[in-house]
Image 1 (cartoon, helix red, strand yellow):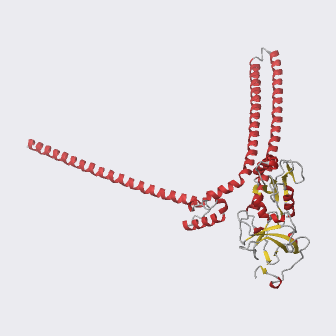
Image 2 (cartoon, rainbow, N blue to C red):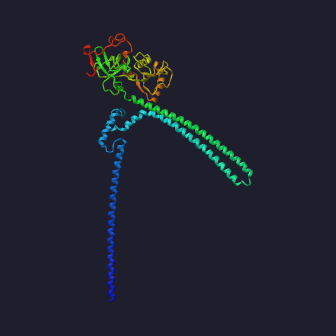
Image 3 (cartoon, rainbow, N blue to C red):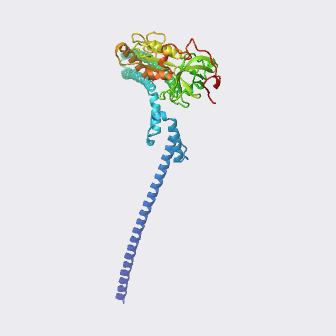
Length: 470
């Protein structure tokens, strides 16, 4: 009976062991499945997180880009594109001629502005470098003075330590050492005084350099202001327009007069209405003022009037030498020949400019040397107010050879001051000057001094008159 009970117990133990093994296997399999599902869940969460981070970064970069170009975070791509097109149209002169659409960028606009002030910024950079050099010299001097003072203090401390250790036995040596200490203190005081004097000298130098830097910055601001005044120089600046035209008598009337400080003999070029750049637009005709008829009216002689594009009421008039309330500044270089006689006519060009209300800051004398408006030798007669450096012939032959050196110096000075250069023929065209004005008798009815008489716009019955706005 006991043997049978033992056998049943053994069988029960075997069955229990088998059940435990099966349960263990099921538990391991379930745990493995759980780990796989956890790993997949972690991978899915990581992918979702990365996608959200990418979207967040993309949104952030879009907002940063919109902020950089000055757009609102809520602006659409179409709105930003339309704003950019308007900006590119407004700053077309800075972008350059006829560029492809994908090359019209804010970067080109910024580049155009940077070029305008580069020369002035170079001056500021040079002054800044001078200040930095002086600061470095000052720092080095102060460092050397501090080093000497430190060494003196170290020597004094060594002497004091030795004195304390031998005080009892070397009283006399103590007294001698005290004298040495006094000498070291005096030397330190002398070093400190020298250091203070040197520091004061460097402070004065630094103040002077800061003053020079401030002066340079004021000059840069002045240059920027003058550049801004002349950047958009158009016929609209003077407000001059043709009011009446008498084609039969070769006479035209304009809306500028005594209150505008207009003078007789001033020449004008005639441009179609809406002209935006006289340096790139050829004049359609030329006028010369022969009589001031009122506060805002004057009679002019028509010098050039092409048949294919005649001068009409409403056309704009413009000259580089004169603007209402402003006197243009100019410089003259090279060999000046106005009428093909191969004789230098610099003085004649000066007279023409001054007759039109302009000022000649610098020109070359008979020896080819640069002189100022008073005729005195000067290598710095050009100023930041000089509008154009007018260049005649530079072939370097005959009489023109004497003017090459002086003209070269004026070109360097003009480059430093950012003064624009212009050829003689182009300048005369912009002034409204015609070679027929250089000499010869005036034709009857053409505005000569001896035969012209004051006329008023009398309407169609007085000749082939046309009125602006009719």
